[in-house]
Image (cartoon, rainbow, N blue to C red; front, side, top):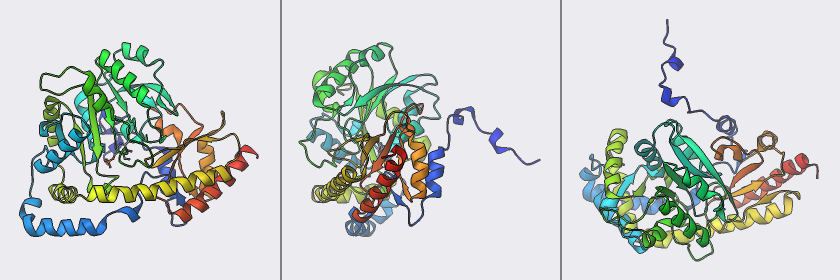
Length: 407
Ligand code: PMP
């Protein structure tokens, strides 16, 4: 008798589901389909030549080290650089507070592994990042969600949830995925104050704040928390664990991110990471260090922002022109996504089916809610499609929506 593999799976993977949406989107990844679905950067903004030059130099000057196993914590100079970035943002981080991860996605998984028992409660804003829900799907945790609006997570009602002592909170305050919304300074302060009052650790996921198209930057929660909090025994101030990544400002294929956390928690995360992948690619870390220490980010990030700002502006203008009345959407000031709300009672999964026929795809909003509870929303990515594709794609989507709404 052949092995029935599905009967061999551990209980912990029961919560892992291949989403119907991902399956649908996979089928439609054809050349003539325009996609606003993925969370991909524009390939045109990858600094390919600079990466090639850095890789060449790393191989020529320190090839045997770059290709060798290395420390789980990460390449020391890169950790120092990350700590300095935090200091520049007003956070007293040192190398001991930094762990280099294989993208922020690994940081999410490691935090789930290290912090969450089955049945523990995680407080999230709704909607939230689908990849975090996926990362934690095998830890059998419970979610408590707090709604958000165009100013980010709603503070009213939050204290009541915090009184129930969730184990942890997860939040994306800046140019959020999926909504593109930024939490206001006033709400940030209140959120930090409340979570500190109730001693709740907060995971602040911040991959997009560098993609800032307009405003003066708002301070990350970790900065606000530090000025309010008493020092932990190891000198770390505040209750915020901060995640950042090179994916949006260099290239996601390098798979490089970092965690900022109290040194004791970093040690535990290091143990968890050892079991997962021993360490993040030495070669990629050397390349990234070479690039950042040569000042590439300062030079290159404004170019990425210019490109994305133009695409966002184009998409918004076309939505104004082509979308029927009764539909609302966010106007993000940075990041890669905007969020569309359809009239009550409409289901964006049905719209997607029609859209697929018109060769245009997006991600229905249900995937961004822990229990798929809201049906009438959808996410559009504006960074990846070319201006020509945005023009065609939004016109097609407008037709689909007008037909669905009957206007
Ligand atoms: N967090 C958020 C909110 C994201 O949007 C992403 C990328 N889609 C990640 C984490 C993971 O990024 P990476 O692993 O490439 O650093």
